[in-house]
Structure formats: structure tokens, C-alpha cells
Image 1: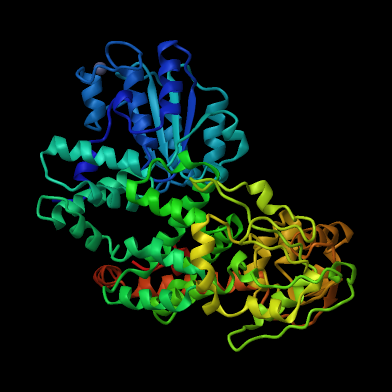
Image 2: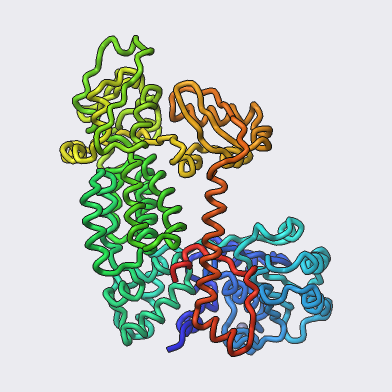
Length: 614
Ligand SMILES: [Zn+2]
């Protein structure tokens, strides 16, 4: 069975069969039925969500022999001709392959001629953002004074690349990615119609792997049918998708949240026996974190998940603070991007999991037993004496240094379905105020030896887990940002800086952070740009973590080490090299180049996110 068969066969031909995209359907049917038509429509959205499908339905609505309406008959000669791709007045152009101005001119030259068969001449330009500047100008001229019998339907995955002059002349519709439940029920419908047997769980896996795209989900369904010799079974699909081990992710995340490093490593060890797709596991982590974050603010946001998944997500929502979810998510993004660069997938995956554990926030339970000196609050000059235990890392030592100036937030109770009060969570509470038995607020400048001890040993945490979790107490929400030179490349993005300030900070190295001062290093150019305004913003950003606004000092250095920006650039170029290498090694590409004596314009190769492991 060839791919795309089902996708083509079940491509909707009327608005009522359209999958999802309710907002577009409503607007267009209303426009058609009330006769308020626009001469240019732009459909944007990711691949396979229905842009050209909608454009073709619209072409049919406009040209059906029975008149303009939102319900074309589907039987007349015009409707049939459009279905069979042989309607002369529907001119389809894939701009990705026709970017020369001559082509567009040629295409637009006969715009002024009346349609030869239909009511409207419909120009469907797919991937319109790929047109050259000259082509855009040619198009723009037509859009400025469109003949009454012409309708332009433009589709793009990247509307930001369109000139504003073109955008302003189009009625724009953004098509949304389809949720897994919509995709799963569509697959179920198709399989029922095709009389093929299936397991529902298998459809969930396919729908998720389709990542919002109907076309991709249908293509995967085709493959699954072939793979399962006519039926779609969960085990087959999981194997086909390389999704072995994905069901372990909630347990793994719970171990990360509890700091159970050795349990997590044991689990990864077991996982590796099934030779899983490590990239798929990282995306699984990403997805689970995303859903957990959603569940914490709006439980109805996870309605599309299967019952098992919902339960797992709610459990995690009770275990993890919103801040930690954000940090772990950030790590999973960089982990996903960098995984192909690692020696092997498993070690990269282990490092990702250990990184999440190393950066997880101190738990409420870890505070228990810390004596609070009543006078301590009045003794702000007392410096903490870090006493790192054997398992302490540099990161943790630095956390200790900072605790003297950190605002101490306490944990917040959660309601039974796991919706924490974000406001409360992120608000520093007054010193010496404690909430609940399992969470104790420790004023930073009273930090004692025993306090410093509790921060470190991961093993100790499990002792208090049961009580803190069972009683529904939340972990302390303070994020364990360490602000060390080593962690700087990961942490700048968590400062919440934007625009120029963020971009400048990304060109700096972190030299040191102490109570009153943050020292950054940069080249003289960046230093010159870091004016008072930017420094104030940076200081404000640090103040959210340090509890007060530090002075921002910028040193000029001739030679800089790796900055967040150069780190990103290095990873980018390594990925590009990898993509070129893989492309060159690809047997199909090699066969092509040998057979046709072809050369590869390597400058056109781009690594695609998520595809580098294929
Ligand atoms: Zn018709």
C-alpha cells in the first residue's frame, strides 16, 4: 500500500467534513452564504493541518454549477473536475518550486482574462512565502487591483516571511494544530469506514506522533496498517514509532521531582534494554511537562488526554512546582536539540535526567529540622558558611552562597486536583512566616550548618517524601538557579529578559555573583551597548532570584569563553554539519548523485528540528 493513500482518499471535500478548524469553517461559510467574499485569502498554519484542503473546498464553493454557497453539490461537472485536479480555472502553484519572477509573471499575465469554465478564476499559491521579492511585487500589483472574477487563495507555513503589503491585502486565517483527541477520532472514523480492526490506544499513539497534522497522522496510519498486516494494534504501533518506554516517563519524572537519582538511573538502564528511541523519550518528557504545567493552572486543559495519562499528569502536577516544570522543560528542549551530538543517545538522556535532578528546587522536607535562631533576623551581617557534603556539586555550593540573599518562599497547599495558586507560589513571604507542617521558611541570613547540610544529600530526601507528598504539601517553589559561570548558558533564558537586553546578556559571560554585585564579562562592543537602561533591567531580573537588586558590573575582555549566544551558534553549526554528513551518507541521496552525476548544493542543507535522528 503506498503512502498518502488514506490521506488523499479521505481528504475532506466539504466544510462539514473538515477536521477541526471550527473558527475558519464558521467565518468562511458565513461569508459564502451572505455573499461577502474577499478577493484574497491567506491560510497559515503548520504542515498538514488543512490549508490547501480548505482552499480547494473554497474553490468548489465558488464554482459549483449550482451557485456560490458553503455547500457545493459535489456531483456537478465543476465539483468533479476540482476533485480530479482537472479544473481549468483552478490554478495551483507550489511557490516552493516556482520562485522565479518570470514564472509568477507568466501566471499573473492572464489574470485579466475571464475564467474559461467557472464563475471565478481561483489562484491557489501554496507556500507563498517562498516567492522571491520580485514575484511578490508582481503578485502585489494584481492584489492592488484585482479583477472581479479572480480569487487568490494563499497558503503558507511561515506568514512572517510575507511582506506586510501582501498581508494587508489578504483576509488571514490561522489554522491550528489539531489536538490528539481530534486526530484519534478521525483515525477511528477512517478505520471504521475502511472496515479495519484496531485498538484505541494504538490510535492515540498515532495521533500524538502526528503532532497536530492530519496528513502526517494519516500517513502514519497507512504505515501502521502495512506494518500490522491490515490491523492497527498498540504493540505494533509502539514498535513502529520507536515509542518503547514512553509509558515509563511519568514514573521517571516523578523520580526526577523527588530527586531519586539512583532510581532514575536504574529505570533508564531497564529502558535501554528495549533499545528505545531516545529522542522520542525526550519529546515524551517535554510533552508530559507541558501537560503538567497546563494541569496546574487549568484542569480542563488536559481533557484531551487518555484517562491513564490524565491521572499521571495530575500526580505530577502535585509533585512539581510551576517554576521547576519551566526549568525542566527548558532543559528538555536543549536536550532534544543536542541529543544527536552526543556520543550515544543513552548517555545524553542520562545527563539530561541528572541535570534536571541537580537543578530541582529544594523541597519543603529538606528544610525540616532547621533550627531558627530568633535573633538571626536582626543579624544581617552573619554570612553563611557552606559546608558541602560529599555529594555536593559546585552548583549546590553556589546555591548556598546565594541563600543569604534569596527571598524564601514557602510551599503552598494544593487543592485536590492539583491547582496550585501561582500567585502565592511566586510571592516571597515575610521572614519567619511558615505555612503548614512540612514547609518552613528559613530567613536566608540565618543559615546554619545544619541548614547547609540539608540542601545537599539527595538520599535524605526520600525520607520525607511520603509525608510531604501524602499530605499534599507542595515543594518549596524557589527555583534552584545557581548562577555559576558553568550554568550561565542554560540560565540566562530563565531570567525573563527580552529584546535587546536579552540579546546583550546572551553575549556575556558570568564572572561572579555575590550579595551586592553581578559581574559580567563581554567584549568592548557589547559593553558599550549595555547602557544604564539595560543594566537596570538585568538587575531587576536578578533581583527576582536574589531578593534585592544587585549592581551590574561589566568587564571588558579581549578573549571571551563560551557565551549563551556562542553556545547556541556552536550547537547550531554542529547540527548543520551533522545534517550535511547524514545527508551525504544517505543511501538514497548517494544513489541519486551517482546515477545522475548530480552535485549537492550543501549550502541549502538545513537541519530540521526533530528530524536529525531519522
Ligand atoms: Zn457542484
